[in-house]
Length: 422
Image (cartoon, rainbow, N blue to C red):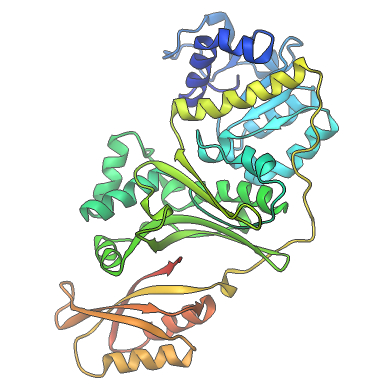
């Protein structure tokens, strides 16, 4: 074991509690031979023999009696170096590390193939909700068309609170931190970084392409206010931090951003800290995977399932084929080419002729308005709030129109823009 945090403690406790079960499942005992920690003196929640703990990674990686290295440290450094060294020494890897797999997954899998070992990483994306194995096995006969996912429990909890109680962002974030759902520094969650890592992993497997986190367009949730949720509900939508990927004409587009989704859709009703991944395929149609995305026991469930699979293959002397063959000629489609509907909220001067000027700007950029809501503004004297819903429009045209609107004297502020996913 490399790491003994929340996930590592859960894995170790489950391995001890289920030792008889694991022996029956695998055909031989599965035991923990060593655990890498940063501080030997730190109190541990799990009841561990102290002789298992070490601060020397080589004591684990060089141990000939260790077959499987479980990496649950998180972060790229030094986890990546440890994984690479373990593979070079003939160790099988089970990891929950989304950052490492998003940035280096294809290279790690290729190195594992050359060294005759397995790398399994079910826990890297949706915790206890299985999605990696279904993509690699159950849906492998399909061409995946698109992925629509909620894969960050922290942001989903915050957005659920804002939607249900109309609390402001800061209040919802503080609640999430007090409950342990958000870190003291929640930047990776709030800015969509965590979700981008996970979407890169899913896109690589689903579309058999090399998709890195830097290929994913990313926006966070910090600009959302209670007003946006009130308007969304009025219009029949929920607001979620969506991770969306699609494959069209040999190009992949991957994006993470807040989006409005219909209230009556399956994914629109995924609330709290739960995750969901909806996969659209050519043969199976739409398949939804829904469940807990984080936490000690759900994530340990995914880790131990991978351990069981690797252990069975070791006992049976089975060397599985590479999990996925990647194409090198698939391009990344730029965000500017996106075609969807948009929600736009403006603060404008409350006088006649304003809407006509705004409509003229949209018309110039070939954007058709589907509906307009106008209300008095509480923030600006003699101001009004306009909420516009467009028909299908081009992302680049929307951006140019918003830039031009900001220059109009009658527009006080372009408050927010959200994409609408039907």
